[in-house]
Length: 236
Image 1 (cartoon, rainbow, N blue to C red):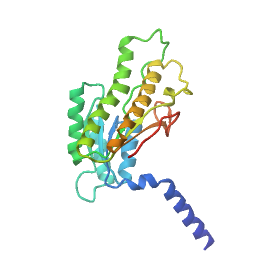
Image 2: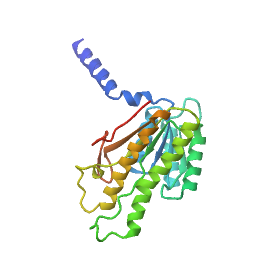
Image 3: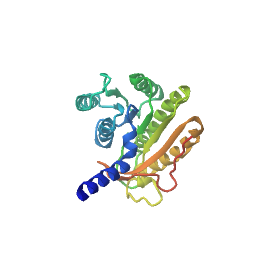
Image 4: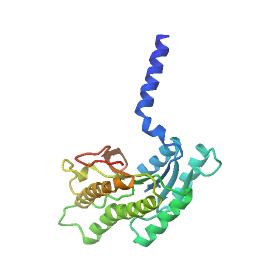
């Protein structure tokens, strides 16, 4: 009896820790950079938690394979697809991104949450050796792309008068305590993502929740989860 009680208490404790993930049934989540790494893992974990997933990235073949796996292992009780692929290059122009976001929205008729995960690290070298082209590419992907996807998703959320959330995957490299020698463009871009997240918090009056994840075990390096030095959140 005592052992059964301990097991039950451990299960309850585990459920409490995982509670946020257990409240995602039927939520529609758009994940950028979903074809590999952290983004792919996000999609699988969200599907396990009962969410509907829009997997977005450049490599459509990988997205199709991922969505097929999700739909096979975690089928929707309604009989429709639990995961759908959408081709999206966050470094493309605003019009192309807007159209991709519309396709993502149309997949399930809404988007409850956006995870801005797509990003590049770029070269590791002295600030004096960085080319303007390299710098622009890192910022176009990590900052401008994050802003544009957020912009077009948020507009649709506001037009639909629905609650929603934006999660931007950042890095300790963008914080004051972050140290990543040679990654001047990457670190600077992630500082930009952190500031973008703060400004998105102003939309909390329009039923938007925004925060920044800074520590996740990933393929580039480890990111620190949570808010980090003042990277906060707001909710109406």
